[in-house]
Amino acid sequence: MKPTTPAAEDYLKTIYAHTEWQPAPITPRVLATRLGIAPSSVTEMVKKLAADGFIAHVPYGPLTLTAAGRMRATAVVRRHRLIETWLVRELGYTWDEVHDEAEVLEHAISDRLLEAIDAHLGHPAADPHGDPIPAADGSSVRVPAVLLADAAPGHAGTVLRVSDRDPGILRALADAGIGPGSRLDVVDAHSVRLPDGELHPLAPDAAGAIWLTR
Amino acid sequence: MKPTTPAAEDYLKTIYAHTEWQPAPITPRVLATRLGIAPSSVTEMVKKLAADGFIAHVPYGPLTLTAAGRMRATAVVRRHRLIETWLVRELGYTWDEVHDEAEVLEHAISDRLLEAIDAHLGHPAADPHGDPIPAADGSSVRVPAVLLADAAPGHAGTVLRVSDRDPGILRALADAGIGPGSRLDVVDAHSVRLPDGELHPLAPDAAGAIWLTR
DNA sequence: GGTCAGATTGAGGCATGCCTAAATCGTAGT
DNA sequence: ACTACGATTTAGGCATGCCTCAATCTGACC
Ligand SMILES: [Mn+2]
Ligand SMILES: [Mn+2]
Ligand SMILES: [Mn+2]
Ligand SMILES: [Mn+2]
Image (cartoon, rainbow over all chains, first blue to last red; front, side, top):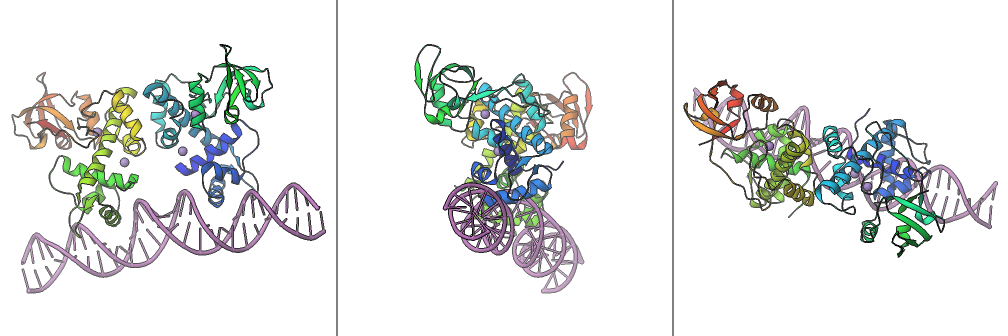
């Protein structure tokens, strides 16, 4: 297929990420907001990406990835998450510090280096935030998950993933010892009970960032 | 100072590299050839770099770095060489495979990641080709060296560095077991004797890529 | 069915960094 | 001193990727 620029890769990745945990397709408006650019810039790039066969788009409609676009997107996501994992496991980064670095490096490393890092890390299945790392063929394991904010009071589960969007939330959770693998009992939408019996209050933002096993 | 783009960093690095082992300043023509671009493109970028205080240039004259330009250049060289060292020591790259990857990553990693890699590697003094890695303050240790092609017959020395410009030469030398630290007796401009007494012929290109202790 | 607010698209611009082709400069050789 | 010839610069263009502002579309509501 056509080669992709760093800018195009960020569009494809963001479109993909939007449907990774929620089903509804993304609109140009939301994509522009996520990328921090003007809606008209999205219109332009969408035209190119549609012409290149990476996205399907009817004017004034939502944006969906084609099979080729999904392949490119998962390739970028794979890079991003392997880089994050590498930074945390090998270089002393914490899980709230890795995102910006990965955002740049995901466009810079070669396939060769990507696979060398993957092998070096022992082919990890998930990144530091619990997000699954797609395989080289684009396949990805999806575990059914509930957002903590949507979980019924009394729900007991294991933290599967924490959204990496807000570093402040990540730091607060790390301080409380909460991360992927932690057991939690949901008391209500803004507090949880930890295995040691301690009641832990959650900011509304945090409850909207934590995904639990069903 | 002014921020620098990847393109500008490559200009500064290439100007710096030209005077690292030879004294004469670089001309626009040579810079264009090294960068693989048209001479007129150099004229334009030179204007910007001079306006930003990174290079000194009188029209129709050669190009020299200012103190600020030298600082930027050594910072990029430091990145490049630390990345090469990391690829070889940690990820199984050979010394002929690292250049292109480093050429891209040198513009992508943060200062934070750079210093983490440096610490992880134990603050190496030289890259896999024997090129000195400048310190974070821009200082660099320069060891007096002679190009093998210029060495007098009978000269005995240790390989200090091998130019990384031609991967073919690097592979051939690696096959012969020659690298930084190897002892060599210069027989003439195109053959050397190894410590085991074996006579080894050298392509003229190779003799122009190997630098020995004086 | 009409209105209108918000979403989307279009038009025109700007910065970066490259190009080719056409001046212009500087100097080495006569 | 002149004259080439190569090196350098200028002029004019192009692609990418963003912007602002204006036009157009869509769907929800009355
Ligand atoms: Mn990115
Ligand atoms: Mn992540
Ligand atoms: Mn480079
Ligand atoms: Mn090197």
